[in-house]
Length: 321
Image 1 (cartoon, rainbow, N blue to C red):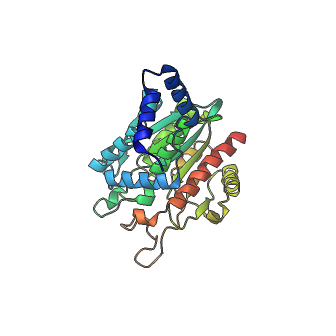
Image 2: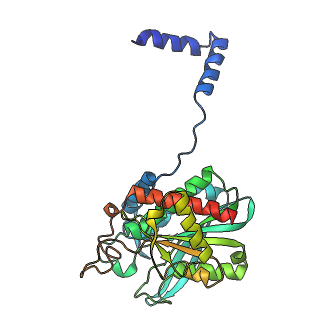
C-alpha cells in the first residue's frame, strides 16, 4: 500500500533546491523513463471523429452558403503550420455556371519530399447545390474524404515524405450547379488541371489519386475503368499488402469524377470510389447517394481505416514505381 504523505515528502525532497544533485538525477531519470511524445497517428476512428466535427461545423456546404465558408475555415484551421511555411495555397477562381458566375476556391497543401516529382491526393469538400433545400449533409459524399485528407496531412506533418512530394487538394465545385454535364460539374479540378498544364506543374505530377465516397460501412471500391491502368494495379497491390483485397475491385465500371480533367491533360490519375452506397430501391435508385440518408451513421471507422491504409500503401508503391 502506498503511503500518500511519505510519497509526497519524497517527491518534495527529490525536487527541492536543497538537493541539487538528487534533483538532477531525478530529472534525468524522468527523461529516460518517459520518451518524447510522438504525434498521434491517424486512425479510422480519428477520421470518423473528424468527419463528425466537420459535419457539425458545416453540415450544408453548397457554394455561396455560410456553411461553405465554415467548411473553408475548418480546412484552413487544420493547416496553420503549413500556411506559416508558405505551403498552403488558396486557389480562387470564378466559375461560369448555369446560374451565373460563382466564386470558388481550391485549397492546396504541400509536403515537400526528397525526390523530384509530386503525388497529388484530392477530394471535393462542398455539397450538392441542387440539394441545398433538403437535409443533405454529404457525410460520405465529401465530408469523410475531406477528413481523410486532413488526417493524411497530419501524418505527413509528422512523417515528411521520403520520396516524391505529397500535395493535398481540397477541390471545390465537383458537384453540378444545376444538372450534371461536362460543363456543369468538376469546376475546381477542371480549373486546376488547366492551370497546372499551362504552368508546367502537370509534367512533375507522377500520380493523382481522388478519394470519393469511401467511408461506406459496406466498402467496395470500384475498379474505375477510365483510371490509369498502372495506378489500378498499384491499388490492387496495396490492397493485397494491407490485407484489404475483400474491399477492392469486386466490381468495375466508369465514373465521371474529379480524375477526368487530369487524365485529359495527360496526368496519371486514379479514382478511388465506392459507388454502391446503400440499398437501391424504387424511391432511391442510387442508394443513399445524393439523398438526405447520406449521414454519419452510414459510415464506419473500419472503412475509413481501410481507406487510410490503402492511400498510404499506394503512395509507398508509387514511390517505387
